[in-house]
Length: 398
Image 1 (cartoon, rainbow, N blue to C red):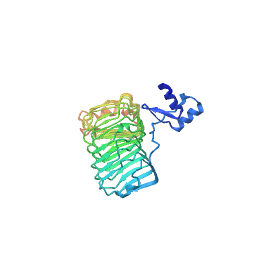
Image 2 (cartoon, helix red, strand yellow):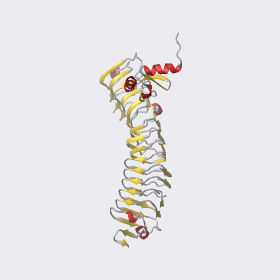
Image 3 (tube, rainbow, N blue to C red):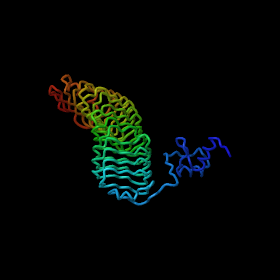
Image 4 (cartoon, rainbow, N blue to C red):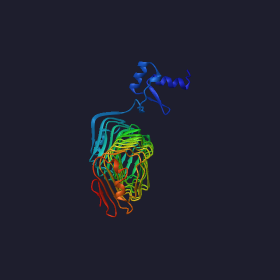
């Protein structure tokens, strides 16, 4: 019997078109094998996402679309380990749908418009190459997909009593988009994708916590209208496009460097909002109706390519948290119990400015002579305070 040391086994595995992942040999992507063959060097091996090793003896079934309306229709796919094609379950008339043997779906998996369905169980399902859609399932209370490790998109919408989902978010790879709306879920913890197109979590009225290791969101990050005391933990997020976070208690976006679109933090229960590394917002930045917000930090923010709106944040009396801000390309709007406004490096406001202070000590005449007023280029400079003192550029103080 020949004995090969571990290193030799590893090199043989790679040279044969396999690679090691978590201690197991799995299929190496074809592109990486070509690079290895053409260059004859292990050093140029291209990294790729983990792929699932599929046993050779899988029972495969292939059809462009399997449509399931009843238990009788399940006979089409019962006994299939792998489905090559889409599975669409619609108007299903039984309380339980259980696919015990299904492991791989090379296509879409959609369950929709089935008000009788109470339980959906797929204990062996590992991969969905397309979308995993659950829509308009008004009686669904339990979902079981504990083995799921790869899916491209998740869309769960109008599942109002779904409170139990046996799914391990941390194990799922290649997830590019998540939309979860109108469920009774309490936790969505550990979404494990470095780059996503969309993360949209809304109208889940009992949701207490959302967390993800995502580093980049290329389209939309939207978390809103969920539970009253939700915590949002995105500690590794580096960049996003449009960002809107509403109705949250705690928020961790400490690594955010750039927002490539609009940034909206409205109607939150936050006591503090800290963005120590954020340097640019490509759209309008708005903080509105955050009644408990008393501590704000934008230490490195230099450019806002849209407007800046700070309104009805009743604990923020001093606007002094933009020490490096140089440019606001849109309008400036400040509303609330404002006593002081400081922006020592602000050089240009391309739009208009409107300030409405409910604090009796705020002086519109002093505002009209401030450094900020002097850099307004695009329109009116208007000021109103609680003493009905009004200032509008070119009209003086009344």
